[in-house]
Amino acid sequence: MSRVAVYGVGLMLLLAFAGQALATEVNWPRMADSADGVPIAYEVQGSGEPTLVFIHGWSGDGRYWRGQLPHFAQRHRVVTVDLAGHGHSGQGREVYTLPAFGEDVKAVLDDLEVEQAILVGHSMGGPVSVEAARLMPERVIGIIGVDTFHDVAADVSEEQRDELLEPLQQDFAPAARQFVASMFIDSTDATLREWVVEDMAAAPPEVAISAMQEMLSRHADGEAAQQFAALTFPVMAINADLWPTDVDANRLLLPEFDAVIMEDSDHFLHMAKPAAFNRELERMIGTPP
Image 1: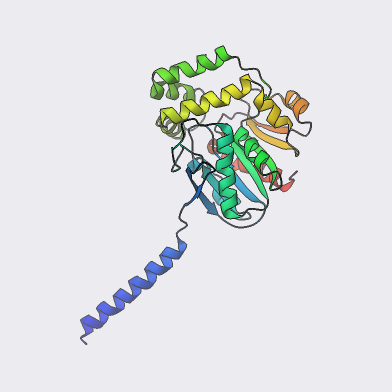
Image 2 (image 1 turned 90 degrees about the vertical axis):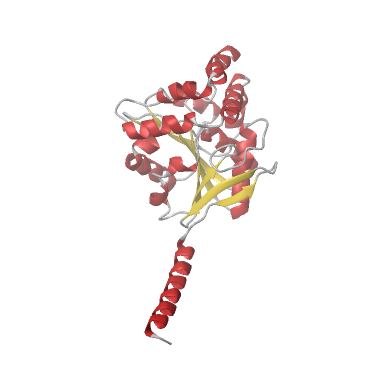
């Protein structure tokens, strides 16, 4: 065999071994079927208990937790979920309800055989966490809300609900841009703000409108407060100071509720100020319910 041929064979073997090594390092996303058969995409990093399950908000997905995953994967198994109709999950529903989103989270925990989990939910992900905990009371040991649970029993009239929904129903993308932009403060990084606004405005309108309508309706009929009050463990929140958080009102429903308010922050505080947010979250996880 010539020197060139030997070199060629050696190169092929080297590339083959390198390819195998690279393949073992790739952490591919996974899929699990929700209770109604809709495929739910999720990703897993790290190891260590309890498992931390990060649940995005309205029109978001698992990418919104990129500022948390490397930090918390050092000590915990961390999971990000794309709720049905969001990210890479399926869109096979006529109505996108909070209880169905709770089933999405349960499907992922079932698939991973999680025994103890802390659910970390941003915005709509907060009430989704409540729904998931109701389905798995023996496995969920805590909920940490992120700019959510401002006033769980707040009364939302049907007129207020319709007033919020009407612009989204008429012309979704520009209305969503305006709606999402109002959730930021001026000091937040402009590149981040622009990305979030455009990303959320690109959400499937039928999914976003249905989810928003369902979420508001549960406040209008008092269902949100009832489910929150039925929890059997404390709930904590890390909230921005953009909107007020009524801790006392929430404690009338759940006496063990508590919240930390991050100053000079907005609705996407975990993305805009990840280091400060991670410190607060780490502190809460270090003193679980």
